[in-house]
Image: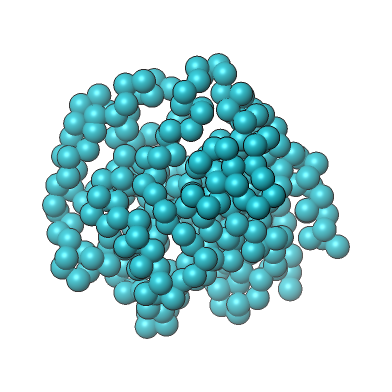
Length: 302
C-alpha cells in the first residue's frame, strides 16, 4: 500500500519514474517499475570512470598523462548549466586522474569526452560485460547531450524544447529528440544501475571490479557536488550519500548509495520523466527525493 501511494505521489507531481532501493547486505529490495528503460545522460560517466581506472590499474593508461581540453562552445558559455571545462574560454591540459574527478564529481561533460577519447563507448560497454553487468548501453559521448533543441533555442524559450521532449516520444521508445530515443541513446534500467552500484560497494574479492578501482569510484561519487536531488532526503550527519546525477531535458535521474552509521548500506536509483514543460522544476527535484526516501524507509522498516 505504501509503494502504491508513492507511485500516486509521483503522478500527481507530473512525473513518471523508475525507482529501486536495494539493501546491499541482504539483497532485499523495493521498487517502482525497475525494468523500465531510460536514456541516462550523465550517469554513463560512472561506467566510463570504471573502464578508465581499470586501464590505469593495468598500466595501459598513465593517470598523469595530460590531455588537451577545450575551449568550450562560446555560444553556451554564458547559458545556465553544469560547471566544468566546457565553460572555459581557453584550452587547458588536464591529467587523466583530474579529468576523472571533473567528469564524475562535477559532471563535466567536456572532461568526460576527453576520457571517451581514450576509452570509446564500445570499449566501456565491453568492460561492463567483462565485470558481469547487463542492461546498460553506452552508445555515444556525453557531448552529444549538448546538441538537443534546448541548445538551439534562446534560454527564454527553453520550455519549447521541453514541450518537444514531452510530446514526441513513441510507445516503443522512439523519439524525435535523438538523445531521448532508446534505440540511439545511452540507456539503462534502475535494476542495471543498482547492479553496477552493488559491484562497486561489494567487499574486496566479491566482485570482478578491482578493489582499487571500486574505492576510487566510490570516492568520486562521494565528492559529487550536485546535491539538489536525493541528497536532500538521504544525506545526514549519520548517513553518507555518494551518487551521480543525470539530466536531459525533462528527464532527471540520480543513482547512488547511502551508508548509515548503524551499518545499513542501500543502493538507491531514481529515473524520472516530467510532463511539465518547464526548465526549472524544484518540485520535481523534491518529489523524486521524497519518493526515493519513502521506498528507502519501507525497506529499512522491513
